Length: 258
View (cartoon, rainbow, N blue to C red):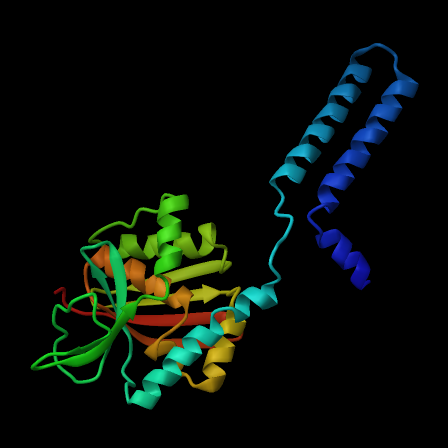
């Protein structure tokens, strides 16, 4: 049974079936050729099956990464960063901020108060009234790739339109969830990802501590926060990430623009 399932899931299975059907169709045509419309349609069907098989074989991803590998890839980086922050006494929730340089950063405050405009070449920031840590957003590389290769354009201003953008990216572009529900207000955004494809990532991080998801997060949550920050022009704070079975509910707070 396992061998059969592996064969069916192979990227070569569908092209092989189409090629076999084309061969059978050509064989029937050769032995039953009556030089009429039925024979012509049979010949045409054989060619269509053959060409479709070639297209599937050409477009097939011949080296797909196993899901168990892709789900575990982000865990170590997020977990290690959260551990370092905790050891340094930085336990605040992370905040995503979009910069004029078309870059999104994450900020973890050490002291309270309003986060100032800070230089991008600093990691540990200390001013007269504020201290904190800043670093490149974990979702930045993925967001840059989406803009470059998928022509992603993030709508500006309207929180509802930004929510629709996130839904399309998560569901249509990346296929990370079967259904995405986005609930927005002027100060908060709640995103529900049903049948979330990377639920083991969440489970592995939250098994260490639920704070990992709000202190640092993973590239997927960071991607959603980065889209929110860029589109709204506001600081986006990670409030919670709750995994319930295969559904992930992520909550963000929107702070005043700087």
